[in-house]
Amino acid sequence: MRRRRFLHASGVAACASLAGCSAFGKTIHLHNPEREDDETRASWVFREGGTKLLNVGIGYSGLSESAYRPLEYHTWHREGTTVESIRLEFGFGRPAGEVPPDVYLDTFDGSPDPEIRFRDDHDAGATILEIPDVGPVGIGSLSLQFLVERPDSTPEEMHVVIREVLSENGRFGDRYVAEADGRVSFTGGDGRP
Image (cartoon, rainbow, N blue to C red; front, side):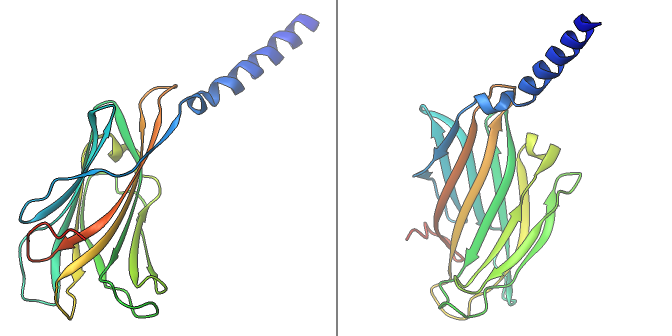
């Protein structure tokens, strides 16, 4: 009888220690990505040890004379990794306290759709989109299409802050936190700050 209690207790302890195995991986913060821009897209490339780990891009999928412009966000990540969460902040350099730009999610390329949250940060004059748990869609590349309020003044640049969290697949995989910010031009060109 005592042997059974001992085996049961040791089995519970083993399961509890295995449940947290992902904690053995490191959290690596990725800063200062390379910029690879073209006429319609601003891209940030994150590398680990010289190998491309993550590429995020924001581009305008056509110019429009309406009050809103189409915007596409695309993320590619190395095989063997999964996107866990995405946070995007959009702003046009409006003074603190002013109404942030309207940003609407047009389409999400993936299924099932994860929970997507929008909120305004009036202090920063920005609109924030958060996908706290990307879910199974995070295994592959992701695309989001938006409609973004066109600014009233020129230059037509938007300030973007990006934060993506991804992890290596497997129990002992590392976790990566990729952060970048910069300017994206509505009219093309590099749009760098």
